[in-house]
Image (cartoon, rainbow, N blue to C red; front, top):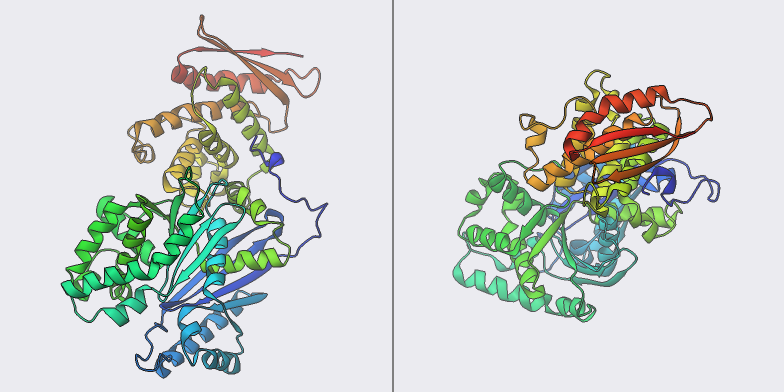
Length: 543
């Protein structure tokens, strides 16, 4: 089971007790300077993001003759870093880890800039290589997406470089970094606005030529039978996803993790962007003003890579280098035993973080999750045909079904939907979070109805059926721990197809306990279950 007790974290009894820490990670990038502040949670081997900051500084806009960082941009960057440092102090951070990438790496005065930062504001910034940047991007992706030990390809399009990574949940199989980025190409290769036909075709050819070696490195490490998923991170890809979502869906999902763009989507966006000037691109809904200046070059990189790798879809990941810096720190300081351990429990840790945030009674919710999964397992192929992934969604809904009590006891099931829907559940995509929230929403009171706004958010018939059936199972699981004392130790299910009868045999934890309240609750809640599955529910108390 995926219950709390069966998640294989390192226990406090076998590992030294780690103290809570607040850590800031700063990415001194070619296009922007970013900072993320997180609270490390030792027991969960995880972290919670508590603040984000970003400023577009454009360190990559270097002197074209000398390649040096410009004095006015250096001044702006130091002012920004000083502000980041002061902000981090308001959160009482224990450590600040700052890294610099492509623009500073390549500028002749890059190290002088870092020395000035340390001298003037007392902040030490590590200069990391392209391969090290790729490694930490990989760690950042591991912290939010389940790779399930299958090969994945990751692309991170930065301002000055593009990282291509081949990996699985346990290791990075190939790390590559190429000197093409959205700012670099826009500065060096694009002089017309809108871009001329000649410059556009040269931009495409230049990208293909520069990225070819990295593509070959990735491809020669793939097995013939591999069908790796393609993941995209950072500003260019997130912006393309936001623009696409606004146009196709009419809104931007609260969580972009898992949002998908096809190669056709990217091709159509590139063809539109190339015909626009920067003012017209800025007017596109969802397009940040400074991003509009460099988005075409970034989109061309993505499109050419997808074509060369022959991939049809890119899946968005909202975490990258900054979060990878945090994971790397946790690995080095013993907060995570291994990358595989960290990767294998993303969803469980995320659910438990939300449970902790909303002060859920985990002992009670864990019993309900066990009952729900037992009912699920004993009815596969009889009452339903859902599989492993749906089972995980049921587990999450069961753990979080009562989080609405944090807002109010009255209509807490509706509050549960809202809190789950708008929580940062890592490892799940937008559709999965909607399903989890709906299952939790319908653990009590009325069954799912078409007039409910939250139910209408489920766009596919299969997803509505999933919510109907799994919420009906969750209702019974809730009834089985009605007194919240663990009165029932186990259950056994039997389905009599000929009579359309479903029998639940329950075993009391304490001999002689008649479990009257649990039996009453089952009888009260069984109607929706019976209607959903078209059967009659009978309950037996076995002493």
